[in-house]
Image (cartoon, rainbow, N blue to C red; front, side):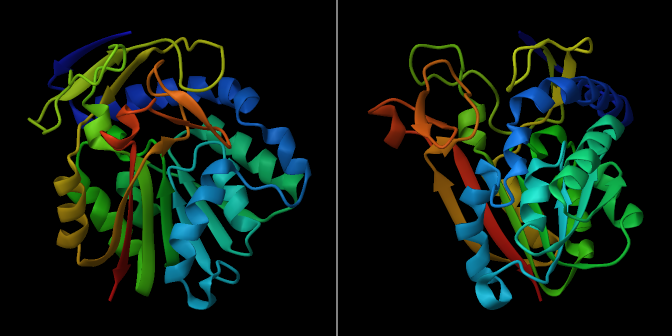
Length: 282
């Protein structure tokens, strides 16, 4: 795995990332425990962790009967889990193979989901209607160059009184050297306009490799994320930071149960692994 800082056109970067994510689909189909959805009570580990943080902000403390837009839904395990909570769900992703896989999972699971193929930065133009909840979780906005444009999509998709929820990898963790024997910063925390160009044929889940190993990512500090949402007119309701992660960022991480990973002691209390934001539209 190698990384360089580069100037790159957004459309080129997006298309390069999409080719990589297209390649990930068959690998992730075998790694995401999709067979577990044969049990109608099954929910993804991500959604099971997110629901206690999301539902206190919802009418009746439940997704039941609400319209939910899941941005960057990938192969649909979290999307189907949201639908099983009684929501009317629309899943949005830029990868056609991922949406084909997601639709097949929804059909096998007996839930009705609307699927929209779109770059998340164009979601408002591509997705009909508005929503009580816009949801995104884990491994999402590092792929986006323009958070102001992203936040504008979120705000425009929400109806008045609607709730936005995000849980994602913490930018302080992303700045670390994932291969070091201790907590050492290696990557930029603050943006400078350039992208991180990665060359890595592996993926965070599964044992296969991709034929399109190049990807582009952008660092976004917590202040930029919050200010993008505030600038789009949303009201910040809650900000939390976590100690576990649903993938193994570093080989030093230890299993924490329920498919999550955490730093060994005493590092567990030294660096956050995730942040969670709840915001609303007035």
